Length: 82
View 1 (cartoon, rainbow, N blue to C red):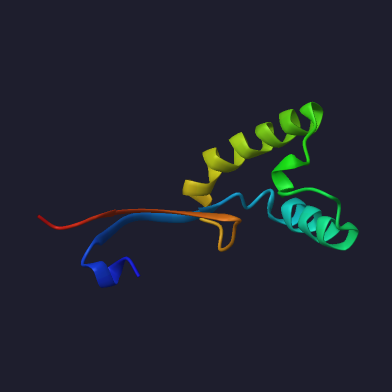
View 2: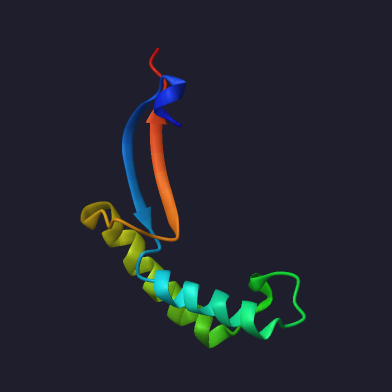
């Protein structure tokens, strides 16, 4: 995809790897219970948000170094040659 554009990949890795299973599990529960919500973003709780923010901070600090083979999100930094 990126390589087909003629761009050079400078950095790439997955992140949100620590939250992969909780996110997958929450999505399965939402799919199973079918709550009356427009988006999974509507499921919100301040305590859970603080906990998830802490885990996400650890995740984004470690993902570039550990380079996990999976994650909910991916980051690609590419540069087009001049």
